Image (cartoon, rainbow, N blue to C red; front, side, top):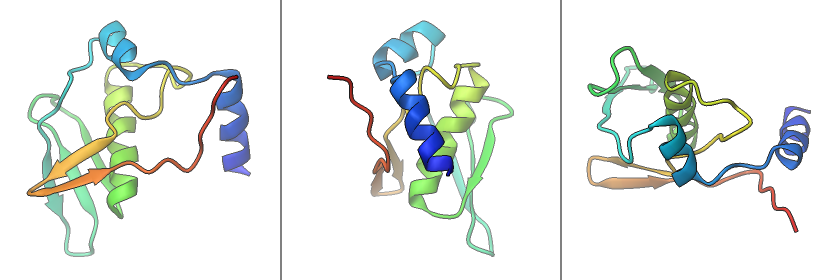
Amino acid sequence: MRDVFHKIFRLIYPHKDSALVKKEYRLPNSLSLNFHLTPDGWFVVTSPELPGLVTQARDHQELIVMINDAVLTYFDVPRKDADIIYDKVTYGNQEIHYKAKLQTQLN
């Protein structure tokens, strides 16, 4: 049900271009992130550039979603403007790319 609501929401409020959102809300183009893997397998992420920013995730895909959620909340970006601004994360020598579940497109 949540996915259906999100899809309808995105049909009404399509994502803004990420470059425009970064400019409008003064988001950095890239972030330095600190990753910590807990003994029970959770990723915990902080940023030395954004004091107080902390998030956690169970897996790589959720990690990107949660980092975006934390950063967008930190900069007070309204949910109607964007969900994902940073679509890839570099973790050590590994690059993690976001794979969207829902796509919205206006014709």
